[in-house]
Image 1 (spheres, rainbow, N blue to C red):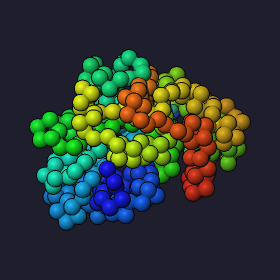
Image 2 (tube, rainbow, N blue to C red; image 1 turned 90 degrees about the vertical axis):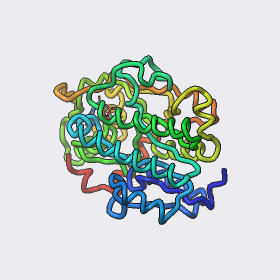
Image 3 (cartoon, rainbow, N blue to C red; image 1 turned 135 degrees about the vertical axis):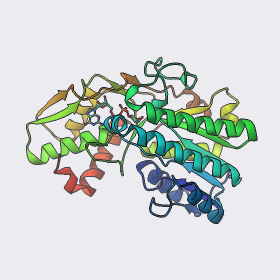
Length: 323
Ligand code: GFB
C-alpha cells in the first residue's frame, strides 16, 4: 500500500508513541497526516469523534491514543484507566468502521496477557489465565479493543487489527515520578542524584522483575512496516487476534537500574523500596510471528537508553535536577 497521499489519522499524536509515528511518517513522505490535540478533539466524546471523521475523512487510522501510565498510576486510577480507554476505543474503532476507513491499526499493550503466562509470551496466550492485578482495568480495556477490531473484521470484513507492543521508552515519554514507567523514572532519578551529588537512588520493588523494552522509534518503524505490508487477513488468517511487537530480550530491573546509573555516571548506591509493587514477575513477548512477517527490532537497549538520556538531559534540564 502506498501511504504518501493517504489521509492518515494518528490518534494520540501528542504522546510518546503517536509523536514517534508522526515523525517517521513525515520522514517517509506522508503529506496528508491528520493530528489533533486533546484540546481540539476529545476522543472520549462520541459526537466530537463522529464530527471529526465526517469533516476530515481519514482513510487510514492508527489508534495510539490511550490513558497510559506506570504501575502505580494503573493501580491508583483504576476506573479512569478502564473507562477512558474503553471510550476512546469504542468511539474511534466504531466511527472508523462507519466512515469506511480502509485500514486501522490499534495499539494495545503486553499487559493483556495472563500474569503467569509461559515465557516468551505467544499471541495465543490471550485469555488463558488471570491478569496481573495492578493493571487489570487497563488490560481489560485493551482486550476489548482487540476484540472490537477482530469482530469488525469477522462480521464486516473491516481491515482492522491490533498490535501488542512490549514496554516502550524514548523521547517525549512521561517523566513524572508518580505516573511514569520505570525507564523515564530511573532516568530522572539518576540524573537528579548525579546533578545534586546525592549518595543514593531509590528504585521501586525488589528489583527482580524482568521486563522487555523497545525504543519507541523501533515501534514506529514496525507500524510503518505493517501499514505497508500486512493486512487484517494476514493476522486473522493465522488464527491469532493480534501480533506482538518487541525486541525478544528482557532484563532484570536491577540490571536496568545499574545500566542507567552507569550511563548517567552516578557513583552512589541503589536502594530497593519493597513497599512499592513489583507487578508481573516477567513479561517477555515471543516475536516470531512478527519476524515471520518480515520485521525485527534494530536498536539495542544500551544505544536506546543513551539516546533517550541525551534527549532528556538536553530538553528537560529543569526536570533533570529534581527528583
Ligand atoms: O514500568 P512499570 O511502571 O510498568 O514498572 P509495568 C516496571 C517495574 O519497574 C516494576 C519497577 O517492577 C516496578 O516496581 N520500578 C522500579 C519502577 N523503580 C520504578 C520507578 O521509579 N517507577 C516505576 N514506574 N517503576 C505497566 C502497566 O506495568 O506497564 C501498564 O501497569 C502497561 O498497564 C505498562 O502495560 C507497559 O511493566 O509493571
